[in-house]
Each structure stands twice: as structure tokens, then as C-alpha cells.
Amino acid sequence: MSNVDIHSLKSVREASIALGEDFVAPKEGVDTELRARRDRRGLSALTSSPLVRKIITFNLLGLMILVAGLLYLNTSRDSLAFQRAASLLTEVELIADVFEAQVPAGTPVNLATADGVNAPKTLAELDLRGQSDVFVFDPSAVLVAQSLGAERGNSAALGNPADGGTFITDMLAGAWRGIARVIGGAPAGADTVTSQDLVRQLLGQTLAGQTVVVPAIDASGQTIFTVATPILQNGAVIGAIGMASAAGEIDQLVKSERENLLQMFLIAIFVSVGLSFVLASAIANPLSDLAAAAEIGRDKSSSKRAPSRVRIPDLTARPDEIGRLSGALRGMVGALYDRIEANEQFAADVAHEIKNPLASLRSAVGTMRVAKRDDQRERLLEVIEHDVQRLDRLVSDISNASRLDSELVKETEEPFDLLNMLSNLSDYLGQSASDKGVELVSDLPPGPIMIDGLEGRLAQVFVNLITNAVSFCEEGDAIRVWVRRRDNRVLIVVEDTGPGIPDQALSKVFKRFYSERPEQQFGNNSGLGLAISKQIVEAHGGVIWAENIRPTDADVTSDPLGARFVVGLPI
Picture (cartoon, rainbow, N blue to C red):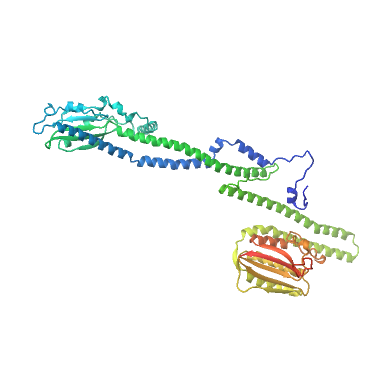
């Protein structure tokens, strides 16, 4: 079994003690319950997490805005429309050139009677392909010949762009039309308009000698491009060629492109959701474990069951904010338990220290009842008075020590001149030292040394050190207070020519209630002064230590020439 200090609660708790061969230590409740929660965790637990929902929502929101912008700002329709219009214009002008090549130079031509040019035969011999409708008109706008795309047997070999499936686009368009019907009512019936009717609308300008390209909408709401160009003989218009594209040809091409975009959008959604779950599990699950560990410890501590120690999962290996959070929580919980154990230890020490004067009082009171001589009673009254004063001093020091932590946190640090404070303390405490026959010497450098801190609390430290030195010195001794600046720190040293500190007590003088004093000074100090001083210095980011002054460092066994306390503070 390891060494155990029975006066230290922390030592007892951390000791490994076996109570027999069959003894089995109980499992930690917090860890067991946390592992059980982790084992029960599934996809449903992940999807129910508000953090996971936010991650998925924001990822999808950005993706949807991107796709909506692409659909709204997509210029492919305009580009396809321009290309299709240019293609139709080229085709209709080529057909017109074929007719013009057959027109006799000086002979009148009548397309209606096939005089000069046989329009139906010429149109049939062109072997037109595609689904566009071609019409030939004479100068009086009478239809002479036509070739309809639906009647051409070779159109199937080119493939119909409408044959491509656009399931997603059609579904969304159908949903939009349904919503529009619900909101705006049923649309009014549209008149049937044929491609020939649309071309005839261009003949007025075409027979006047102009080539016209006009997009139009048929009865079903589909886009049709109509083109008309004149047939010329020696600069005179002898007829017109009109062409209309297949209904919805451009719409279907645009729908096909949008279908491809939406398909990629759906794939991106699945990928984004999957990656969001992976990202969320890497964030939400560790955070859930950290929160669950704290909640389990809180619930157990507030219940009537025996509380378990809160154990925060160790995620410090993660090089991110969650790793930092885990480390911070573990450090905070560790500091909290250290504070709890320190308070418990402090309470135990207080009880132990108070019991000594109370036992002395109880003994003195009991003895006074049987004491018969006046000198004995007087001696017992002196003991009682001394113990009461000791209790009063002890309770006051304990009260100051217990309030110190909260006051150090609440008070605001301000810059002040350290040398000015030490000079005032030396003047104030020099008189009491002189009354005892002890000389107090100050060795302070010129110029101010500004530090940030609580001036009143640091003054309390140096008052404790100087008064302690005075209490150990005798008439003819001296105390020196000197200051030196070292880079970013300042050293304040209080040294005396007293008896020094026993070597075994150098590591104990800063412990609470520890006092190493002559027998005639017993009970005059609570043993909290140096402990409070150490707490104040460390709260300011400084250090404090004690050492003996020896004639030479080579001979550590020589008698000390005095004691030295060193305080180092950052500046």
C-alpha cells in the first residue's frame, strides 16, 4: 500500500487500499452511464439533434440558392433560341435560292399555275429533313406548296428531342401549374393556331421584300420560331417561303438541360446530406458526450443517491475547438474538485485548530471549580483569557482566509507604484520595529516600478513578511527590504538577521495553520499569514519562497545568519 497522509483528505482519497482478496472496486457510475448512452445512440438520435439539423439546413440552403440562381440566370435558352433562329433563317434562304435559281430570267412566273417554276415538285425534290414546316406562297398570299415535318418519313432518323425524359422538370412544372390553377383559377381556352397561321402573319412584310424572324407561342403554350423570306426575280417579289420550327423544340432542349442540372442537384443533395451527417457526427456527438457527462454528474449530485465524480471525456487529442473545449472543461472540473477538496481540508484543519484552545478552556474551567487558592484561580483566568484571545484571533484569520478567494476574483486590478507602497510600509512598520530594538532598512531603486494588481492585497503580503521578521528578531537585529528589477519581473526581498528557519520547515512554512515559533510565543499566531500571502502572490501570477541566509553556499550545514523571503511579480 502506498504512503497515506491521514491528515490530507486528498491523499486518503487517492490512495490505493485493498480490503481483502475478494474486494472489487465498483465501476464509476458516470462512465458506465455515458457508455450506455453512447451504445444506444443511433441515426435517430443524430437527426433529433438541433445542431445536426442546423448544419444540414444551412448546407442545403446554400446549395438551393446556387441552383435557383443558375436556373434563374441561365442563358442557355437565349443561346439556343438565337442558334435555332439563325439556323431557320439559313435554311429558308437556301430554299429561296433554289427557287430563284429555277426562275427564267425574262419570262413571267406564276407559282400558282406552275408557270416557270413548279413549286410542289421543287419542294418535294429538296429532300427536307427535320420537323420544321415549309410553306410556299404566291404574291397574293395563296398557299402554293407545303412540306410538313410530321409527314416526312426521314424525320424519325434524326431523333425527336421531345423523346428525352424530363421526369423531374415535368413534375415540378406540373406542380407549378397545379398551384397556379388553385390560386388563379382554370385558364381560359386558347384558340387553335397552326404553324401556317403563324407564318401567314409574316407575309405582309415578306411580300414587301423583307426577311422576317419572329418567335411565337402556339395554343399549347410552346415556343415556335417562324421565318419568312421573299422569292425574287430581277429584284421583284414573285412569292414567299415560310418556315415554322417544331412546336416546343426549344422548350424541350431547355427542359433537357434543366433536367440534367436538377439531376446533378439531387445528387449534390444526397452527397451534401451525407457529408453533413459525417460532419455533424464529428461535432454533435462529442459535444453531446461532453454535455451528457456534465448532466449525469449534476443529476447524481442533486439526487439522494451517492454522487459520482464528474468525468469529462478526454478529447484533447483533437486539434480543433472541441479538443480545446474538452481540455478546458476537464481543467475546470479538476479545479472545482481541487477547490472542494481544499475547502474540506480547510474545514478539517479549522476544526482541528479550534479544538486545541477549546480543550484548554474546558480543562481550565474544570480545574477552576476545584482550585482553592487565589493564585491558582488567577493563573487559570490568565489561561482562559489567553485561549479566548487565541480563539478570537483564529476566527478572524479564518474569516479573512475564507473570503480571500472570492475577493481576489471580484476586485479589479489597477496599476500602482510598487516602490511607493513599499516605502510607505517601511515608514509605517519601522516605528514598531524600532520599539523592539530592531532596525528596518529599505533599499529601493530610484524611479517608480508600475505593476498591475490589487495594491491593498499585495500590501497585506509585505506587512505579513515584515511583521513576521520583526517577531523572530531580537534587540540588535536588523531587517532589510530591497527590490531589484529583472527583465519582465521584479523581485522583492525581505531578509532578517534572526535565527533563520529550520531546514525541515522550509517546505512547510506556507501551509495553513503551520507555525514554527518559540515556546513563549505559542498561541500568538494562527499560522495563516504566510499561507494567505502565498495565495495572494500566486493570484497575481507571481511566486514566493523562503530560504536561509548562510555565510557560504558551499557549506549548507553552517548555522544560518537569518531568513530570507523572496517575492517575484510580473511587470
